[in-house]
Image 1 (cartoon, rainbow, N blue to C red):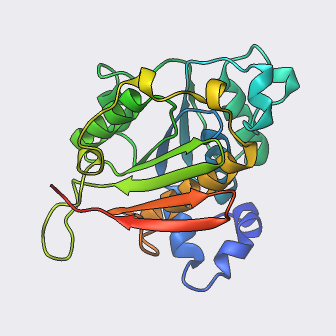
Image 2: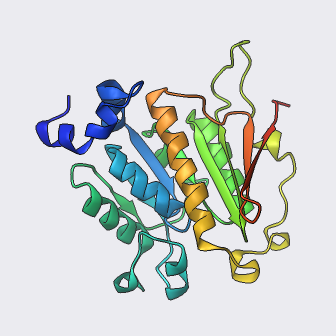
Image 3: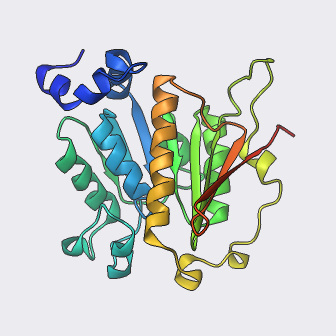
Length: 247
């Protein structure tokens, strides 16, 4: 049930046809793990906090640097040198004091991932190392939790949803991360944004779409990007969708 303050706060959701109080209550009772409070994690934190996700766990072992502020919008100049997880959690609570936002200032690993993922309804990752992304995907599959995964480079971005623990209409398992990426490239072969650069607004576009996918998964509204890779070309302002199947 929503209290009086929540009814006012989420009034635009409550009058939204096809959404309403039922979907809002699902958001209130949901738990989401956000891995990475950087460029992609920032809009995810902001929009899921504003949307009323009741429990947002934010994990990041990094600290805020001046060069982050061009795109990592949940952090400010006064946060430089502080832990990103704590800064992101404080930003979320400033938007919505009704939600819980426990920060975890450490890295997600094979050893701790299952304990982190098991209580969650949705996992969201916006990390910048392919090996880390693959590890998170494998562990979310083991935990039986849907994963919203996004990546950006220069002017471009992409995202998809992995839920191989769920079955499609034919009763077959949905494709996994390894179905889309059967070979894991070496991290050294994929230059980071410190080398190639990144347009800050690109992370906002992809991160906001990631938040949208999480809301769809939680509420059961719409069709998530399962088995579909959405590509964004910022310079051409063009979206392309690629379908992939289980292998």
